[in-house]
Amino acid sequence: MKSSLHTSLICILMLSLFALHQCVRMTVREIGRSNKIYIPPCFHDSCDHVFKRDCYCCGTKPDLCWDDQHYCNTHCPPLKPLIN
Image 1 (tube, rainbow, N blue to C red):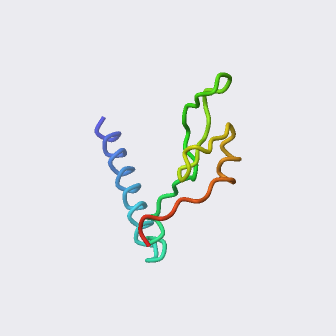
Image 2 (tube, one colour):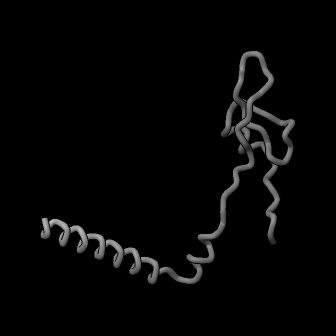
């Protein structure tokens, strides 16, 4: 029992050291890029159509809705960033 606990603690320690090593290896540019969040131009919504309940609408123009997410993403105007 004691040896399995000892082995588990060594594995946890090794994984923690590996994760810390990966964080140290990151450059400043990689850290700066990691705080950006991608917000797609379309959002999933329920439509008021008789045959189709699900649709995707533009975030900038909610009155524009399509049943295909890829089509909506390509034809919606992009969202404006909140921070310059």
